[in-house]
Image 1 (tube, rainbow, N blue to C red):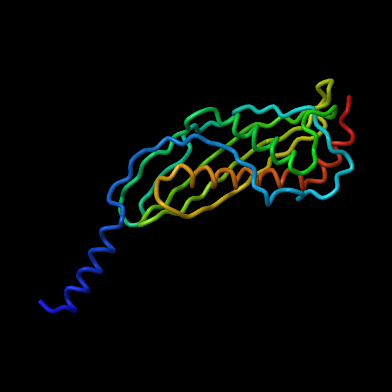
Image 2: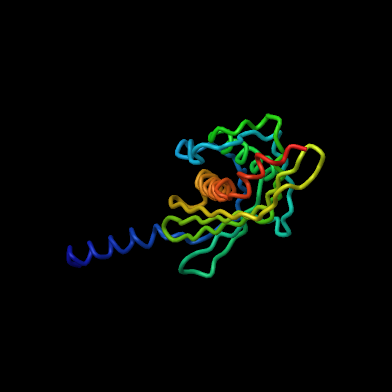
Length: 198
């Protein structure tokens, strides 16, 4: 057998041996960590205080997502470990605090409904990760009056080793940050911060 043939076979073996041959279900604990790149995105706000962030889980689909092989009929579920409302609370509050909003002030309360959260991990030798989060956000006065309400969405993507919890956390955090950006860019949100006291 020629050396050239052996080299080709060796290269083929190395490439094919690295392709995932099975996908197992995994459980992912969401953990929010602030991204320093988000600091100061809002610029100057005329009003910059809320009395707190309250999150509820309004999802109809509780599974986090799916792992799918790019070239084989392999799939596996991804489930959540822990309470996703804690993750949304920490993410929204952290993002606002990074942008100069006093989250324990005397302003309106921020009510957040987690409407959807879905991930897709596409696996071959490594994996691409995509996440989408859907929220309904409302500013409510101290007397319970709704001053402003709007749905927002955010997406995130990542690439790395397959089945890695850290990659899931980074991807979902990016999606939550994107939703927070869309929220705080809304003119209705900025206006309601100033006119939603009582």
